Length: 136
Image (tube, rainbow, N blue to C red; front, side, top):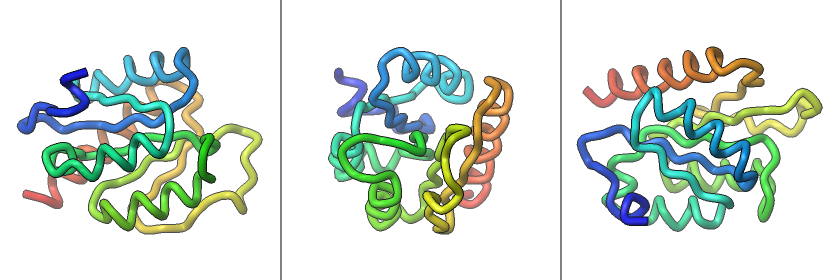
């Protein structure tokens, strides 16, 4: 629980928003290969509360979420998150049954159908490396 409040500030933090415990555990294991500091929350409200913390927001480098989330719609969550954290990329993992009209076209928001663990790792590595080049 302490990890949620005080991430290691010298590490890139990935925020994973996923309400499904099994799927979240699998995704978290894959993401921890890119950076060991992956914080998982189960809903958008928890994610938005976390980014309000100055220490957490400073260390946050990537948000990963599904195309369908509970609580608020995915487009509403993404818009709210981008309003609060415009410099942090958002990776939306889409399902095969998602309709193209459900996507929010906002700068810094990327969509993939992560059909393989390697595809997810490659995409995450690319987004983290692009972010570190922009801030350097």
